[in-house]
Length: 283
Image 1 (cartoon, one colour):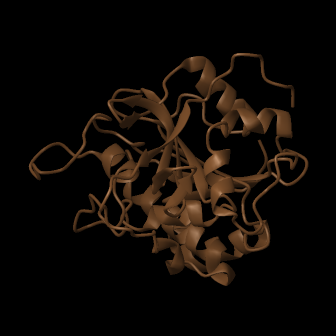
Image 2 (cartoon, rainbow, N blue to C red):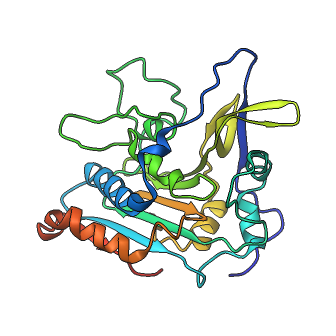
C-alpha cells in the first residue's frame, strides 16, 4: 500500500455540540448484538437488506472480506480517514481503543445487483409519507425507523446498527452507487456516547462528510472515492449497490469461518434458488 499524497482529504468528522438542558441519552442499540453472535448478526442484517433492495431479476451478490494483516492499511494511510475523529474517541477513554500506530485491519460487506441508497441526500425528515422513497435518508439519518414495505423484512431500521457495533471504534463507512442516477456517494458515521472535549459537550452521533448548515452530505469527489475503493480493496467500480467498510473490526468475534457458517445456516434457500450469490474471496 502506497502512502497518500499530501492534501488528500476524506471529508470532515463532526459531532453536533449539545445545547444546555438537552436530554442526555446514550445509544443502546449496540446491546442488541452479543459478541458471540456478532458474525450471525452481520450476515443476517446485511444480506436481508440486500435482498430487499434487489434491482432486476439477476441474483444479488454479497461479498464479505476480512483484511487481516496482509491487506491492512498502514497507520500513515489510516490517519487520513480519521483526522478530527480521534479527539472524540480519546475523550471517552474506550477500552481497547486502537493506538495511532496500529495498522488498520477492516471488514468489508458489499452488495451488487441492488438499488444502492437512492433518494435526495438533502432530505431532513419524512413528514410527507406520500413522497418518493428515500433509502439514503433512512440509512444515514434514522435509528429504529425504516422505509420497510409490507413485503420486506429489512430496509435499515435497527439492522444497520450492527455495522458500528462490529467496530472497535464504533464507526463505519458506506459507499453507494445508485441505480437510478448512477451517482456515487461516500459517508462515514461514528456512534459513541455523549462526551466532552474541554468545555464542549457533544452528542453521540458523528459524521464524516461535507456539511451544509450542519447537515452532513455525502462526498462525491471522484479522486477521494477512487482512493477509498483502492485503499479498502473494494470490488465496486460503477456497479449499483452499497459497500460497507468497518474499520478496526472486532476480529475476535468476526472470523471468516463464522461468516461462511452463518451464510449457509441462514440463507441456504436463496442460494439454492439462485437469488443470492456469496463472494468471500479477496480483492
